[in-house]
Length: 377
View 1 (cartoon, rainbow, N blue to C red):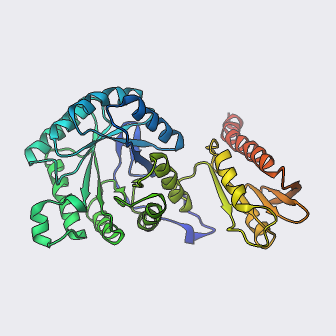
View 2 (view 1 turned 135 degrees about the horizontal axis):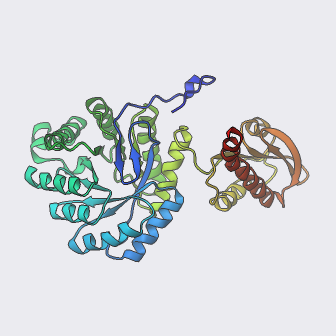
View 3 (view 1 turned 120 degrees about the vertical axis):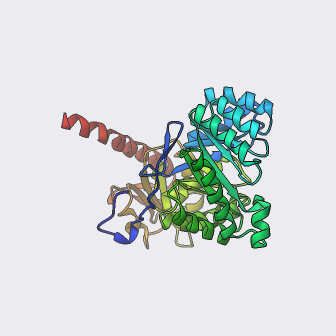
């Protein structure tokens, strides 16, 4: 990540981790922090699962996880992997055979929960299948499924128990000369998860998969995830993230990207800066932003748009955005381009006009690398 010498208070120094591959996607090291989600369709319904994967990929998912609870799902996984636009992680619980079958089906990564996969020998067999089929693994420690001996030792789920569980299973992988793994230590309790991840980050150089598990619905889960993962990411901890919501997986991807965008860690699509609106607003800010969010979903180019209801903060916010609109009087407002006043636009035409200006700016930004390359040649 490049450093901001003008505004050093914005710098985030990422923890140094080694890099692994999840299919074609690098995780860890200096690779961008990736965004994951998980399908909630029946894996045996291949068409529905692929549709959800495609929609998630369109929203920006780099990796998608698919549950493999039975043999029929493992068979379906082969077709899903073949048609998926992004690498697939196979989610394995309770039965080690599913892990072996998923690796043979072409999964890019196997997610196993050490607390419920079985004996060390069974874990070793899954490791061998991963090695033979060129897939990585994720050790998925969860506060809700810790090993019995750790619960007896610590009395209850806690950060120390979670980290000890993770390190025990790291040793199993390393003892079998397998190093293509990442690790998570999730809890639904934000404090527990954050403390465990901080300890884990100090104890291993493995790439870390961040998540607040069972976070809740769209609103409450977003808030818990933003607090827990946001603070860890701000500290430089985390190489890939999954926001766990009782909602459409596409919403998980959107929230994940917004968390990363707010910290300057990933940039994708239009970042809308908007005011909460008040009696000073010169147009309906809330309705306008809702409409623009929908109308601009197709823009993948990183850029900024300010939508401010009045001139108190509008001009100042527009100074720092690619496109801006500030409410004025007499049914019109001011359009800003590249931080400068450009022209007035009537409120009844401004949505269509802003969409046009954003699309035009996106095209200009997309053309810049090509122009620079041509100039260099």
